Image (cartoon, rainbow, N blue to C red):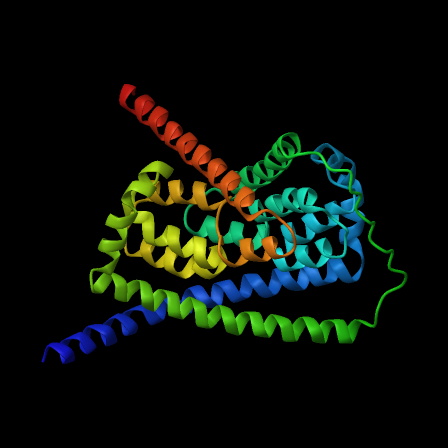
Length: 315
């Protein structure tokens, strides 16, 4: 009887979560398709390299060659995989790779992830500014503190002429279809997992276990599961779990904004961090310096709340 009751609870959780998961999934796919198509056109018509030429002079202050600007922009507008494709075509040493990888990890997939953060209640403008400035500040800081190197990166080869458009479009369509299928599976799986963990009391255990770490970060204990999700699968895939928690009223608006301040610059610390380490970046530097930046941003957000509360009481 107890087993049957458990199965009934599981079926109830799955049935309850399907409508919201479907809604989130459709929204994410729409955003992903539109953004990826626009980025495909920018890359096809060689507009991204033109934009990178405009900002490449600033990269000398970060200890990077001008060609690294294209790697950063590819990650900024598309994703980490796009940035890695450019980074591996350059002869970057561990120092330069660590700097540019840290910048990309801070502010990759800007359009899609800003849309996700905005959906949770964060200010889109604030997130873009915070993530972009954090990326350049950390790049500058690493250039100041990491040991100097004399290695010089190779410049990217100049592409002459355009490839046939239809094969490029077909390749984009197939890769986007694969991405959307993967996104659908992960979104539904995460939402169902999250609801089951809540139903059977596992979420409470996770929150208690991570309370000391959350306190150190300046985050409420109830955001611990969403913090784990963001760090394991990232913002795009973790959006479903975050939105479901918010819609159910499980966490307050202030709690969400504190969490957003943290994960804006420090998330996907499993897959993306591993990939950046595999191509030469120092994983512990990329992890710790973004964690430190995230802590600063959270406590700055808490200070804003504190000042706002004082002003409100005086009124």
